[in-house]
Image 1: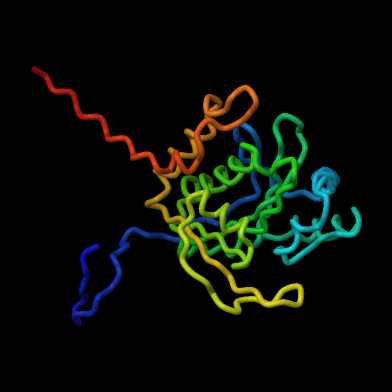
Image 2: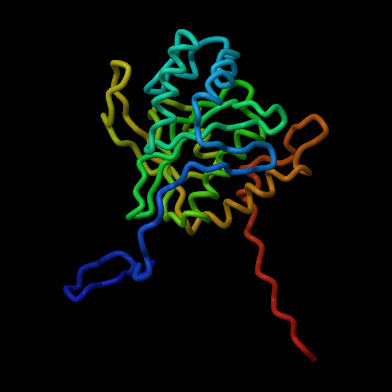
Length: 248
């Protein structure tokens, strides 16, 4: 990127003369092929979610979360009542379209409409959701909502730097690693160094094309196994625009 100098010969960032603050995300339903996202509602979703999480053999899915694990359905419902009432984070339930049941949650948080920056977090996916097209589509639907409907500039992912599955998920989904914020948090009585990742709006069109190709039904065989990995889709060169027709 060429250097831009101000009147004092100082290097400054590229101009954004048309930028305007964006709207915050709303409590809405977002439809996909394999799942839909619904604004979290404890009365409708708590029972399904608690049952889905209980399918895990132990509490390891909660190790890097600031909440949980929960001893029983009542304690989980108490947490969910507060989460559903929150505007930031704004939580969504992931609904499996085949069963109609909630199988996980994720949230938009640290919402900054003035600068067009938002984070996806509190991603709690049950065993029924992990390593399925639903888990990828849920992430894709929220990204698409943020970049296309809301027009944000930056989409963030943060996690404990020691949470290797989360770091791998961020990389698979196309987030760019940005570094470590040392001693960023204290939670569950221990230190957290936070790994930062992001996607920016200029990267979205190519990522969207990769997600659309990966999620297409023809990318899965009769057993539901992927034919081509998302990383391979992302590595494909972007298609060239069609040349205009010339008249003889």
